[in-house]
Length: 326
Image (cartoon, rainbow, N blue to C red; front, side, top):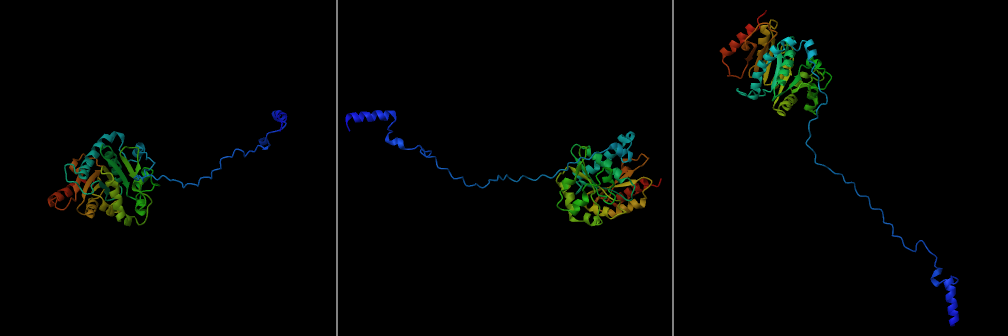
C-alpha cells in the first residue's frame, strides 16, 4: 500500500467510515460476567434456648377474702363494739398457753402443737364464734400467721360465713392428690389470717379425714411455714365421727362449753372420747359471771404420767362447777 493510500485510510478511519476491526463486536450484556448466583444456604435447624428449670413456686390464689366485721357482728360471731376490749383480753389469755405449747416457750413443746382443733361436745356451744375470734387474735401476733380451716365439712358454716363455700377446699385436697395445698389457702384482708374452705362435701368424709393424705396436708401447712398456727373448726364430738378422726392429726384441742347450757355429762363424755395424750383446753363461752382464768381455761388429758389423779379430779371438779346448770 502506497503512502497516499495509507493516509487516505487513516482519514477514513478517523471519520468513522471504516471502523476498526474490533468495532464489529456488538456490545453484550454478558460482556462483563456477572457473579455466579450463590446457592441458597441450607436451612439451619432452629436453635431453641432451654433455660434452667426454675424451682417451682406454689400457685398462689388471686382471691383475697374480705373480712366484714360489721357483718360478723350482725351474725353474732364478733362481740359488740362495747365488749371488744374485754373479749380481746380474754382471747389473749386463751392463746398464750396454746402458743407456748406450740413453740415450746417456757414449757415442753407439744408434738404437732401448731395444729389446734376447736371442738365442742354439742352443736350451738359457740365453736365457730371461738374459732373466728381466736384466729383474729392469733393474727395480731408479730411473728406468727394463722390458717383457719373449715373442717366441719357437712355444715361448712365457716365457709358460708366468709363467702367461700363455693371454693375448692379441704375435701377437694383429700380427694385429689394432684391439687396443691397452698393454691387453695385463701388470704384475707386481715394481715396474717388465711382460710382453707371446706370444699365439696362427700359421704366418705370420715374415711378421707382418716387417710394418710390428711396427715400429708396437715404436715404441708405447718412444716412449710413453721410460724403458722392452724385452727381446725371441727364438727361436734358427740354428734359426728369426723371430729374424733380429725383429732388424730392435731396436737392441741380447745373444747368450747356454753355456760349453763352444755350438760356436764356431755362435756365429760367428749373429753373421755378424746382419750389421753392430747393437750385439751376448756373455754367457757357466754358466761355472765366473772371467773378466774383457771376456771375460764382448763387443761385436761395431758400425757400419761404428767398429772396426778388428784390433779385431774380437781380439774374435773372445777369443770362441774363452771358448767353448773344456771
